[in-house]
Length: 186
Image 1 (cartoon, rainbow, N blue to C red):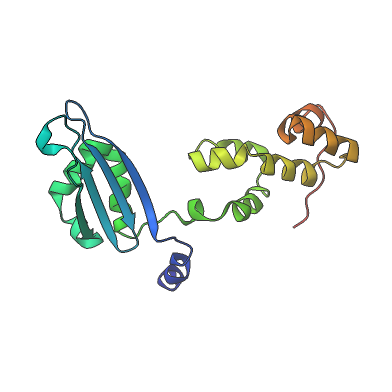
Image 2: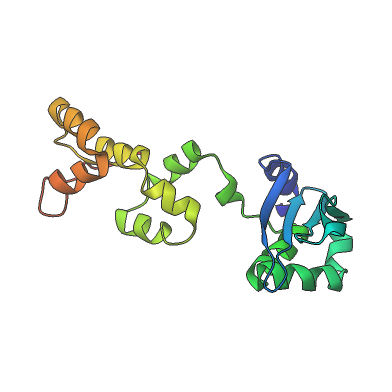
């Protein structure tokens, strides 16, 4: 059953699965980019040097299939040195087909899913990744929270929320000592 789901779930992924770029560790000032697509790993490097011979030099580019990358210890070592072991581990996982589909869902769908969580779980979810932190602290999330969980919400409060911010209004009027939350229906 899992293998039947994978092709359908893979359609949720864009062409680029992951991309990172940055300067290598000192003393070199070279710049690197790693791009993982559905089919290949692209490794680009730019030599940053004051030497005349290197000025205007084109970037070097290496393209490998996922399989080849998983067996290229030299490139893996370079990725680990430049971007760290966490990025190397994540890159290898992507090349092995281990995708975080939840992280890749569109924000509107994620907001819908998160709306069913108790707020203490939302707080913990916000600590997992930058994407979830941004989502759980977004005005859209807090507006949805106020509208769906707060039984005593009025049009005047909506005007206030639009001016002050939905999160602030939630904690001002609907925190533990304030009015009770609505009972949620599926």
